[in-house]
Image (cartoon, rainbow, N blue to C red; front, side, top):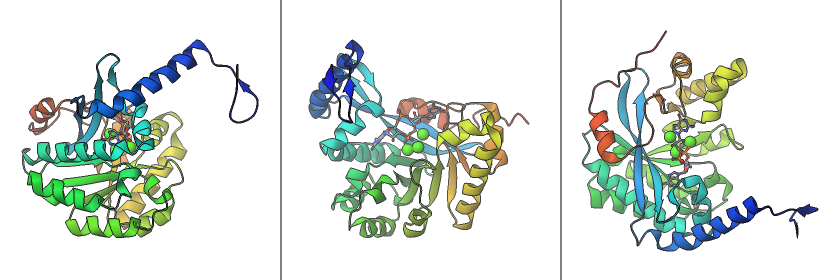
Length: 281
Ligand code: C2E
Ligand code: CA
Ligand code: CA
Ligand code: CA
């Protein structure tokens, strides 16, 4: 037993010890993962709800660890953020996603997740400008997904960064909306083009219905009044798809259409007019 942080004793079981060891391994190996070419991007289609057509894809980072195998971002993004390694990884993601998307058929957009740590770096807008110039991607095809962590970081340059990004002409999405504090002030202060409604609401809306549906309805109304698009995240079932379509979200993402996949697979599917999914109602 070892003395725990918040009072009382915490028992370190074998599993906890293994988890701690694995974390240490990940921490050490993360440093050369970039140089060793162990990262890849997978793409998950974003589907326009009204037309059932693919409007683009979200880039989701994958780490191919030599001994552990595929590591999910939840297990290493946090570690990367502690050491600021996230800035180098994030730069790679941005450049790779822009370069890939520049070769996609015209209207398809690319959405890239941006860590708050990366966002508040002074050089971030210049990096975005550079990634666009280097790839030749039209700015309006790039959508940066930002979480409220950006505001909680309390940086004095946040507003200037938003303005600089807006003047580049890229799109901004507020990710995971409805989790955390989700202050309406964030929507007032920053020029978002889209709100991504967290998958917990989508999941809740068919299980413990009315309250979650009311919240989605309110977010959609708010977004519309502010001239923003909405994405329902994590749509897995036909019931959920019917529900979010009924509540008039503008975009849908989720396993019901597709999981994140390698680029070639995404492109093969995205160029079909329709994903063969019809509303079941
Ligand atoms: P996120 O940005 O909210 O991305 C959505 C996550 O939900 C992804 O998990 C995606 O694979 C998963 N997802 C999509 N549809 C469904 C569904 O229908 N059901 C369920 N259960 N899950 C679904 P993933 O790829 O494991 O990424 C987790 C998180 O890691 C992301 O959440 C994002 O916060 C972070 N992340 C991923 N890639 C990057 C990156 O390049 N940079 C940064 N800074 N963060 C990233
Ligand atoms: Ca995201
Ligand atoms: Ca999200
Ligand atoms: Ca997603």
